[in-house]
Length: 209
Image 1 (cartoon, rainbow, N blue to C red):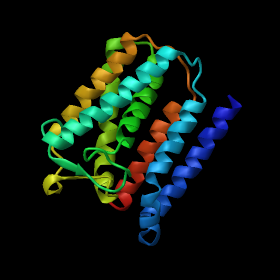
Image 2: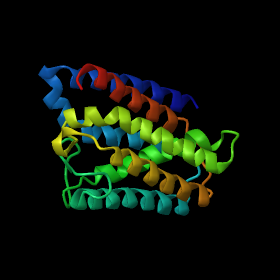
Image 3: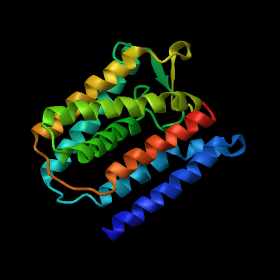
Image 4: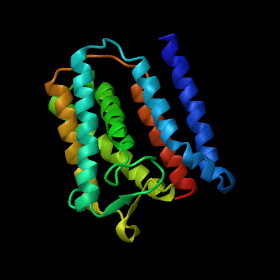
């Protein structure tokens, strides 16, 4: 538990530094180049404290990451899922116009929301719908900042309602996969990381978006 508290404190400081680095025009370009590494670091620390590693955990984590990556590829190539958008430089290396990092980001967010809500005293169906709602709330905060930081860009600079509907439906499916698989694990970093990142985007939204 002590290790998790230290990691959470580190993440608060780390993303706090990132807010200032991205908020100031003089350092924004440098910090934009570091964004893929910061996402990997946060996810790496989250999985470092994952308990009860089992082969089936790895298979389902891989499934969610690949599903996230696949749906984003389809979204970019067709414009039919989220709306018409394209990825910029902010998330690094791309395949078929889509950074593999985005699949890992889907996994990180779904994992964190699942951990956050799984122990709440409510039926799993309500947990799934509440989790999907949290994912959409996260996206609402993130989207304007993502465009400003060249993570991705929407046609005409307008975020379509279709995007949020797609986020809700995709999140429902992914969270349902975790629940149907009856994955059982604890993680004291994942929920904190989710809200730290949400706060990170909220502050930058107020500052630069």
